[in-house]
Image (cartoon, rainbow, N blue to C red; front, side, top):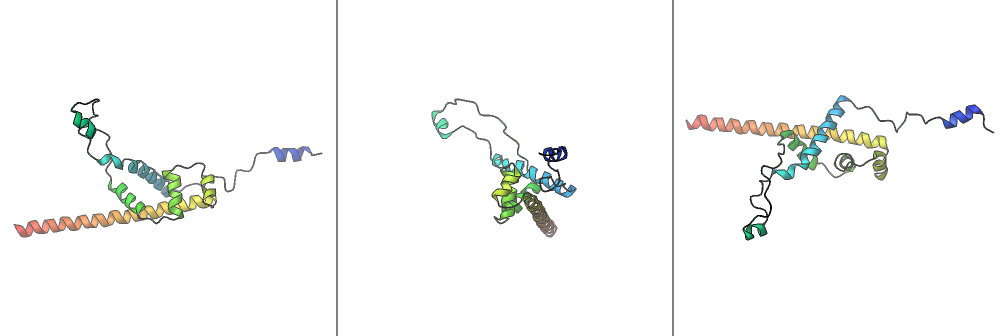
Length: 168
C-alpha cells in the first residue's frame, strides 16, 4: 500500500523545467523572427507584380462579350529592398538541415515543433538553435547583399554625374 506522501508525489504535475520549456529569446532573435515573418508574407505576394489582365481569357476575347466584369486595381504588393535582399540570401543558401528547419518553421508552419524536430532526428532544443543560427546567417547575408547593391548604386550615380560634368 502506498503512503499519502507517495500518492501526492505521483499525482503531482510534471516539473516545468527542461527541454520542453520555451527558451527565452533575445531582442535580436525577436527582431529576426519578425523579419522572417514579414519575409514569408512578402514572398507570398511576389506573384502579384504582374500587370492586371485587360480582357479575361483568350476564349473571352474571341467571343467579343464579357461574362463578368474584371476587378479594377488589384492587390498592392510591397516593394522592399530589404525583403528582396533577404529573398536573394534565402535562395542562395544550400539545401541543408538549417534551411529545412527554417522552411518547416516559417514556410510550412509545421506544429508541433517537437514532431518536426523528431522527423529531422534532432531534439527540440537543437531545432531552435539551428533556426536561430540560420536566421542570423540569413540576415547577415541579406545585409551584405544590400550593402553591395548600395555601393553599385553609388558607383552608377557617380558615373552619371561624371558623364554629365564631362558632357557639358
